[in-house]
Image 1: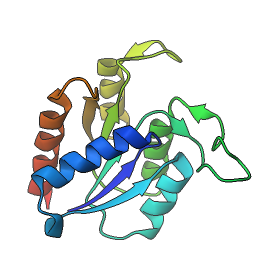
Image 2 (image 1 turned 90 degrees about the horizontal axis):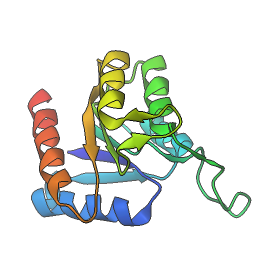
Image 3 (image 1 turned 90 degrees about the vertical axis):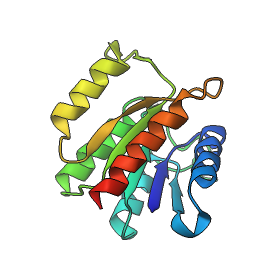
Image 4 (image 1 turned 135 degrees about the vertical axis):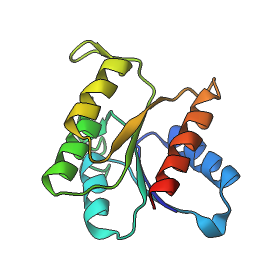
Length: 154
């Protein structure tokens, strides 16, 4: 399984990666990482055979470089923008949103409301959302359940 993780926070990305390697044999798993909206889209356009995208909601618009040490202002709905770009380009790779937020301040909506919105806007590839917390292990079972569904689609 080839997994694209689009996540700017190193610790969260490492926890997800470590978990994936703990449940899948390394010979059956390839992880590709992107840290921003722009690099995530570029990866989707350039890397073939991605089976699933694990997508953060809030991230910078582009990668951190020496010219732009912050990678641009964090965009609270960058994940939604990436899915919009996928729909525009007819990319139908399954997407699982993994976020640390339960509430999204910009529009003051809950994670459940956001999930319903994404199901309506991106029905061809959006699979669901997972609330990530490094203190609580529940996200792992949810992720594994979604990944089993992805494997069933192949």
